Image 1 (cartoon, rainbow, N blue to C red):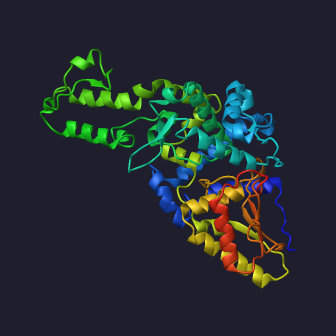
Image 2 (image 1 turned 135 degrees about the horizontal axis):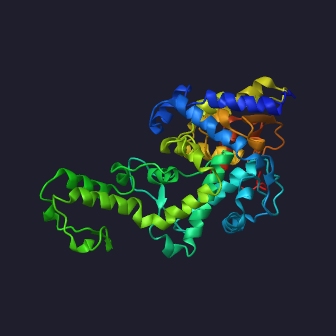
Image 3 (image 1 turned 30 degrees about the vertical axis):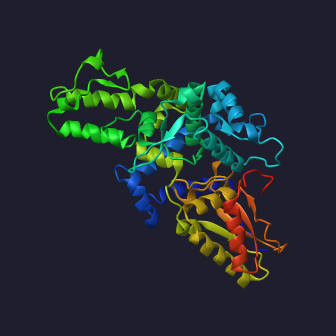
Amino acid sequence: MIQERHLTKNERKKQRRNAIASSPSSSDKSSSHEYSYYSSSGNSGQFTIALSTSRGFVRDDRIVMSVKWRPAGIHREHVLKQSFQIFLTAPTATLRRRLRVDFMEEPGIDGGGILREWIHLICNQVFSDKLGIFQLTNSSAHQGYWISRNAGKHCRNHLQMYQFFGKLIGKALLEGLLLNVRLSIPLLKHILGAPFKLSDIRLLDETVYSSLKWILTNNNTQNLCLNFAVEEYDLIPNGSNVPLNDGNKNLYVEKVMQYYLFDSVKAEIASVMEGVRSVIPETMLHIFDYKELDLMLSGLPHIDVLDWRANSEVRMLGENVDKEIKVVEWFWEILESFNQDGRSRLLQYVTGSSGVPVEGFQGLTGMDGDIQLFTIQLANSISKVYTVLPHASTCLNRLDLPVYETKEELEEILHMIIQMDVTGFNSR
């Protein structure tokens, strides 16, 4: 078997810095197009500096990152309830330690992979329709999750749940974890304390946005028979008795914006921000714009197989090299044929996360946040039975891939992986 030299800890840190400096946002042709959609300034160099600076906070402000925080074992079936209780009662000093998670009655020891799976499971429940505290925006320009104004009807402790979500955001930023959802731009702006503009309403409700644009650009608005009230909420004192006209329409638009972006979700946003700021230094939030924060929290919007392949390692058995090379080639060809959902599910199976970090695949991490590239480890094919899945080591981002006899056999196995729930270390 061909052995590869393992990097020392200092070498891994150097590799991490190089990955940031040469990330797809600044150099990779295919990924830079994706990044340009999210970057407001178009200056990827500034973002690289901001990214490095944010990780500098981890080193300088959080000395306790060298101390791990490993809460008592969490039951998978109660992951949200138990994590919610643990986070809300933990002091700030504890929240600022490096988190490691153990699932009860599962053999895995967390070196990073279980933590990535944990946040994936948490997001599935926090953003579910059943919990009802977030809603997906109906904007065609940018879909993301926003505060539900009916959250209190669905979740009796919804303000505490928003605080928990804020703490989750803080941990994700500090530990380089990815959410498997995207947040709406207005929510990202609230987290940063960034200014709003009229077009932000469009990202929440295109109908309301179109109505406000019409009011601003047309005359005789008194014919609309509107007053300064929305959904029985007075936008100004006694607003339900103040009619809209051309003389006060600018104030009307301003107050409607304030209602949808602030007043209708004031307590909920305050709870989110209380959670965020209890985990990370507020100054850390000032170094990003909302598009960069989106990348930090949710990763690149698309999975590029060329980038994936270019930043992967292959470890051969060395017994039948030609055949082993062919199996690896089959793997990439099959992966290329998958849609984005299929690629993300396979990535989830191997790494514990369905998203790609902002640096691209060269930024994948393993133990304690060190660079750990996606690795294919060729393995002896001990069974011809199709139901035997390749073994995945999420803490090492490694797929132990048997040397299958045919491409069709490998394709069936990979399709099986992406079509079933393979979370949990007993299934690996």
